[in-house]
Length: 478
Image 1: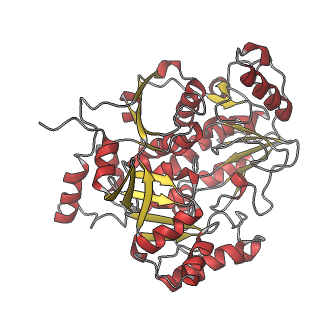
Image 2: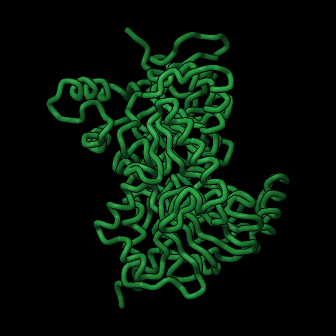
Image 3: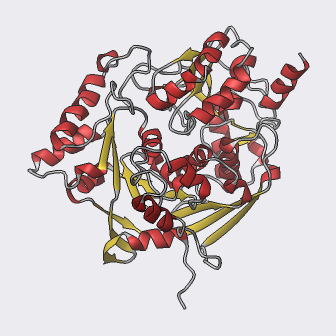
């Protein structure tokens, strides 16, 4: 009788080309996503070495980091657009890699493009030169970010060397409360466990709460796995996954009844951890303990319920935590002991590979509808891809945002990573649906508070960090 096995170990073992000893393996790569920040350079390196791309049909390239999000943008609209985005186009087309440029119907942020096209599949091993590649684990893929030299290696060999991580399962059970969404779940997990808790681990998320989430919400959770040190995050595929994939253009013949689809479905349904599988670490979370979250510091782990108060440095026992808190509070211009709600904001950003999908925009629009952005706030909505933008416009979400005073932008990463002049000014405070609130992440001396789409929209309307549940109640009474 075979030993019970985790989903991670099943997928890992199925991709081993050769064991290199000491838990280091050479693995076959099924899918490789390439973006403009590192893609052109990697393809140039490959060309200079006289090497060809091993499997161009297993790659997709799209510009997302170097391009402007302004309406009507071209590659020339941003300082590095033509050099990085145009360079990627030239090199990708020469190598035979499908390129989703600004005029392509599927252009967008790589971690939005992969799942929505069906390029990301359950059971596949997917890599990208971007730390938030763990997003794709939401579909039951083995996915993680790789470095620049590894991008070149994958292009040349369709393999990657990786040391086998330990395993962790985080089980979240129960029904989420009013106003609580996936971003709150993962911020609560990071705040509860600490930013180093996942170091050296592949994390599987499980439990009734996770099973009840849609695929886009699951992507948000897996996206932030890297923010508490995990190498990758994943969720076992289920009927929700298969329904999501059924009509995607790049899935195997994507027609029910087709033998190719049926074979794929039969394989995918077996992708789960065995009932008695043993993980190196188990964590249980009660969904009832999760409230709408907002970060107060300069790390995703420095988060609290919106109803809470900013911690005082002396509330921590460890000297390192006290020091980190003091430094973060000074940078953020906050004082310990004060309620986080009521903190005035200058900007709101709804977008990024974390929260720029259609369901995210729907939640934000539901808060914005019939309301107006505070006069002192600049608020942007940046859809994650052309299909997301078009779907949102077909539903009239763009008109809701525009009527409320939000700017409706083009797909890209710029405001998340402070490129192309799309930055938060020094000293300004931004509520952002992105994944990182590090020092200078959205611009020099910019102050970033991470939150979910509904909370971000509520902050834009109120002009300050506010509990979206209270804003909803006011709307109902009026």
